Length: 144
Image (tube, rainbow, N blue to C red; front, side, top):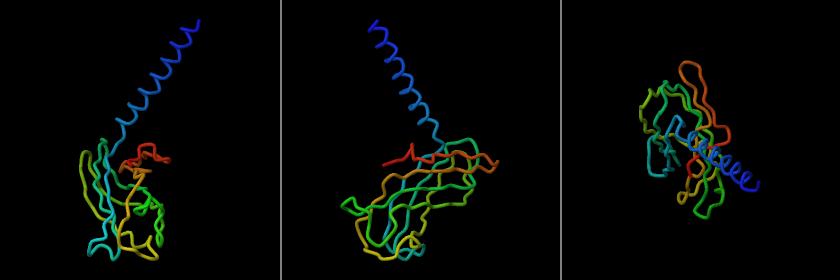
């Protein structure tokens, strides 16, 4: 009887493990990003440089990018919001890769020029040109 319960528990764990692997393989994007404080025409203080690939089969018309900013000690930085949400209007075809930089100056109210890092970067919503929506409200597929 005990072996039967262990076997059922094993199947239960195996099932949920395979579901999470399956779900991760079906995320419709790849994203990578970093902060930049180098001189730029796009921003005065800081920018978000990112790489994005549309892995889906539909054209993307809007993205909502979410990430957190920390200083070199892992603390929220003084002088700026550390929870950043960017709504990006775009036109990204299936399998297309884009690279872009977005100003973060609107999130900064006092600036120290070094040591900022991004953590917990994810896409919370994708709006497709046909009106369909993909969401990840809690950042289940976030990169660290």
